[in-house]
Image 1 (tube, rainbow, N blue to C red):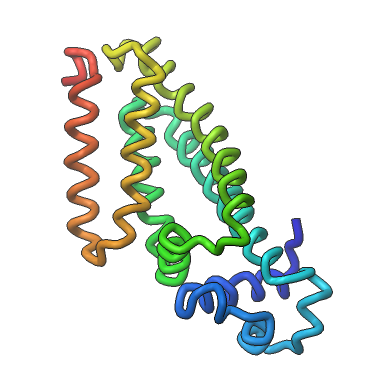
Image 2 (image 1 turned 30 degrees about the vertical axis):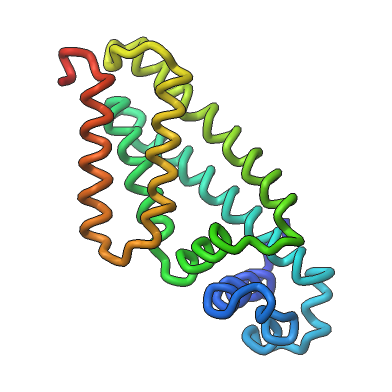
Length: 199
């Protein structure tokens, strides 16, 4: 994984250009201009534009999974309910960055055709990592008698749907409303699976 300052600037410039103008207009020339370097200098770090985009997706996936794990470890002393909700809330805030949010909106709605296969494969790998972590939390909740419902697969599927809603809510500019809706959805979800003691 490339990690020097120039690579970071290239990725940040690409995110901004793609968010504002789309994939076709985020050319190597435009990226170089935005970074403040000559176009040939980019090739010392990336072979082409596709590689830049794939590195951004790879980096976002790694950073998010890492943040996901840190969030769970940070609140390991709390209840499973609190841990699961903290992950939803941190996901919502993680993607509130303006350029990153716009980048993801475009990527979700208009994924570049030449990257679709790579993006699908990366998403599947990314989701597999999350599923393992989430499954562990639900198993812990059942073991600790916090959760009455014992179909772990169903719990994980429902939670993933809630997690996906955090991405969909990127399209709503009213952060207060988004937060309120997420809290309401989580409240209904948790009450439906919690033990009587937790209700």
